[in-house]
Length: 269
Image 1: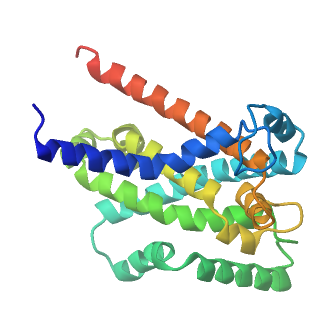
Image 2: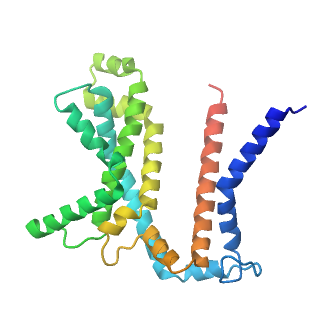
Image 3: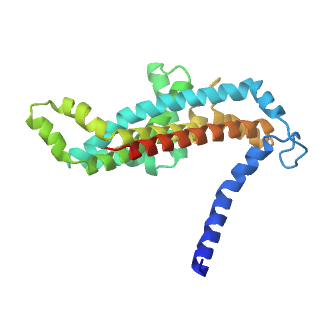
């Protein structure tokens, strides 16, 4: 028999889930709405998915965002892993406070300030070196790597500090070089953290609109910028259709990963 406490907890949990997921569900439902008005239902239709396939601007922006996000996540994991390893293994050294401060700066500096700073840097480089010729994909990528690298370093640092150092010390005692120990022992042990950091960086880059607004140029409009510009003029059903496809893709990936992890954990050792 359920007591009043259990009923209250269930009600609070249900209201919390409703608050989180009701907007997402309504967005998905109205992506199948036949009416061009996203606030009134006039019947079921797939017309906006067909319209999405013919929307070259939106598809180009989505492809550019995916490309930048993948490149950003890869570079941020490479740089942030070394930075996190230094924080977790090297201890305090001369200039340690400055190193930590510079590495953590993108976490605490508002993105508007970071975007202006990077924009001024590229303007000075263009005036002094003549490179980069114009803002575009490369400048957006640099800005996103600068932001995501700090998040990766925090994730990797936490994982490195939890590792059993005796495994690395045993490999060193057996004659392995430090780089060999890092690539053969340390990296496999922190592989789940690397995957998490990559996915986090990918999401941050794909979602960013502030840095991209400062660092973009002609022909380098990302998906968040395109959606934001359209929303200011009125909500479009094609945006609902694109968001629904994103949600279904992400949900499918999450379910598959969870099933694979569950199978791996349930296998007899």
